[in-house]
Length: 417
Ligand SMILES: Cc1cc2nc3c(=O)[nH]c(=O)nc-3n(C[C@H](O)[C@H](O)[C@H](O)COP(=O)(O)OP(=O)(O)OC[C@H]3O[C@@H](n4cnc5c(N)ncnc54)[C@H](O)[C@@H]3O)c2cc1C
Image 1 (cartoon, rainbow, N blue to C red):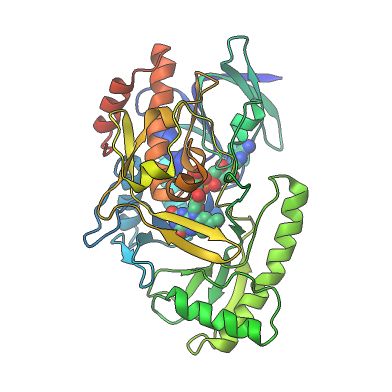
Image 2: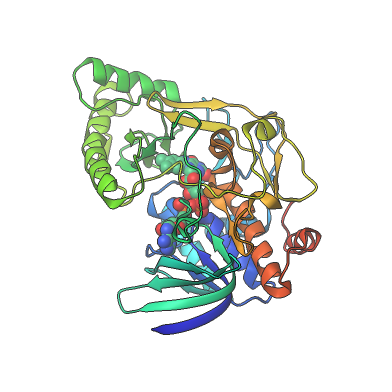
């Protein structure tokens, strides 16, 4: 079998993986980024989740809390004509940055082309081997031509679902104490929308009217249409289901159910919302959007209490300022963290408890179920990804972790700690 060697391997090319790979490569490390879909951006591009949450804190004066690689992506979006000023949702009062997924895909292609990262799309990480000392030694990656054994000094799992941690045979956490898991949703592209934001209540009213009038499958009635306000198209994220696991069999059943539900939701909106008479379903996302995946078991675990109190940590690698966003069978609800504030993401929450050269970033950072509902958003994913990339690069260079050094490099790369 073909063999290759790198300093750092990053699995997953979503917000977290991109920030990890670019950040690590800028320290001089030789970095491989492996992404199994055919575009960078993770759910933002492949599942059309077209709002970056977590870049701004919430409150009377939203402040940008994530800079570094994430901010470079914003500046590149701006250079391509996107408005990167935060949009405030009329119901939730949360500040997010809206973009068109097609523009983001181009921006991320350009960012990768300008980088020193060795990146491979359409390539899956399929196995991992650990040595006697517990450290990860190598991974197997596979595309339609070949399988390659890649060894590295450090690894970052940015797969959203902790797939690398799982393949390495290490324990993970999933769901809450009662086994509750956030619902996964199918993003639906809808055209014929008026040029404005929609409140959660007005959408909910139409969905409930649809249900009362016999339209089937409208179980969740609180959710959003995410769009650039002035556009005539947007992405409905309401058709939802609780996943049983991450296997193909369950995914097949869920995708087939949700594709049918999508038609029913659009039928309800176009029939019962006074401004949506022209709404048409144009496409359903080719992939299911997971809100909750397996989580890393880190040296530290961020709890809901830490997040709600906006706890600061001397070992911070970045800031998180999004509230707890919960999606259950009843739909979407929020629990707030302190206004105009953020909590720190400690380096140890990205460091595997069981494997010295393995780091986690994005949705799978070591948290409890509640803190995951905040940390999982993509703006925050850029921050944790950047941190994990520098941690991995520094470990690859020095063979041990020096958090102060990592913080210094992050600041040099314009991250806000
Ligand atoms: C319906 C819905 C709406 C949401 N709305 C918002 C929102 O408005 N704003 C927001 O900021 N967040 C939102 N989120 C949350 C957010 O999209 C995710 O939590 C976020 O994408 C996590 O980022 P990530 O980089 O950790 O993972 P992802 O974006 O999921 O990226 C992980 C990448 O890893 C790749 N991968 C996985 N396994 C492998 C493997 N074995 N080999 C190679 N590659 C692999 C995947 O293909 C994927 O591209 C929403 C989520 C859902 C489901």
